[in-house]
Length: 183
Length: 287
Ligand code: SF4
Image (tube, rainbow over all chains, first blue to last red; front, side, top):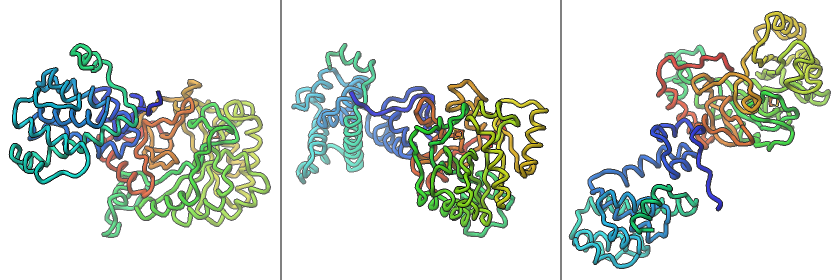
């Protein structure tokens, strides 16, 4: 397969080095490191959008896995399915998110159901109706909806990036998903 | 390094000009005019040779770098390669660059035919110095590392250029040199019309072909001069940054892919320089 070069660990550009301090940071960082000035602004933003914040770890991983499944991004689905399990989602819940199909059965919590409806509308493309906005705002506050929507958008950006550049999933992630029957 | 003090800068001077004036940022901006060369030295950092891709900067880009370097507050320019005089535009480009800032241009000194000498003659009127490589006082030893007939061509070109009033510097790049060999080399360059003040001796840096050939000293970023260096592939931490090994460009000393506006890599480099611990300055006398 033709894939994009990722910087070798002895060739990390100066500005990118802090992101490699703990070893191999994975293919997104290793590919973006080819353009250090992009990496150094993209990563703080991606970290703020997808990392720890006022939105729970669990809710963010629901957003990331579901959005990535809708965008057909193998790399992000596989990588974040493992993270979602760590965030407390069950294998059934992860499987429902991955399926792109109905999720109500696996997610009985009304707030999570409202979130999933919102993700499907935002990530699905096209216009977003007033009704949909009103529905999500009944379960989530304005600032939460802002952040969750930004997480969908950031995830979509990474989905297209990882898919277009054919970034490889870490073998450990594939192994874990196989054990859980999630491949 | 500039001797201008921060106090003497105009009030509107920007952060790069201030950093240059107070010695935080080296004053010179380098440009890799091209990567190809008519010869193939054993220690070449860029694996240059007749068959490699040119990866040249256009004269327009070089001029834009020079203008922006001056505006930002840099005080000197350097042009290197590859063999810079393989680019037919080089005599005119050097003159145009020097209208902005003083220039030192590196050359292997082997291409100065009568025709090229006529084309560079006007550089005597410009603030341009040509830095020519001459490693040994004996032709056989010199040519072993560089190319057949290199010594003869260089020792002919130097007086030809000096006669025309062009400033010539000699750079000697060696792993080691005996005192008596160095004495003979210095006597030779004086004979050729180049004073001691225009002779520099530097070690081989173990990058590029020198690494493949197991030559030279290991050097990390802090050992190497941090002069902003612009290439067709991006901006680097010094002219020893954009080296090539096994046909692949090294990126360990890459600063940014963006080269113009020059302020982008200049600010990124300044950020790196300001972030490094005190005293972590170049230690290997590499220039
Ligand atoms: S060291 Fe200079 S002269 Fe020798 S091959 Fe490299 S670019 Fe050419």
